[in-house]
Image 1 (cartoon, one colour):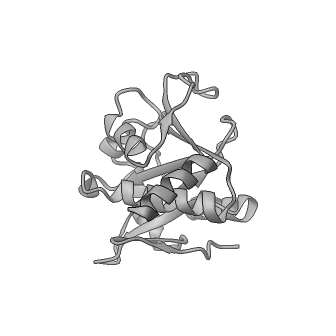
Image 2 (cartoon, helix red, strand yellow):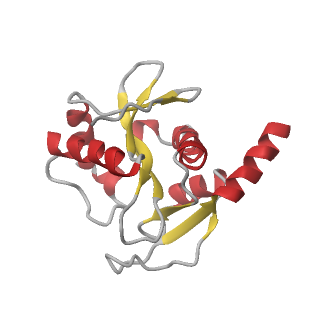
Length: 183
């Protein structure tokens, strides 16, 4: 099964994965700037197995990571979505974008669309977001911008490394969405 759920924001298309994404994903995973806050560091090789894994998550959970393309160009710029890692009690919203697209509000835009999908369509009750290393201020700012609040976790249960975690419940999302709709 492949991802058939697609979302569009003002500037992004969040879509299923295809073979042409492998090269772009490999570039992202091997860019030390992009991966500096990931606990594993750069990944040596990205293969079609990665894409099969992405599609398997959608099949198993009804959510996963989307490939992200810039609508203006149609070019692949990263991934955004919801993952259930298993070592956290709740799934997490996550994003990895090519550094050429940082500081433009794109991760925030994609993360908001992802939360909307997660709470309103996938029926998730509680979503986390994890900055794998304290000091990842850009990701922490995104968590704050999308309305998440600090969570009481400070160590990754799997990696035993310090983390900064934010969270949101579906009722908090509903309250934010109602306020935004009334604006």
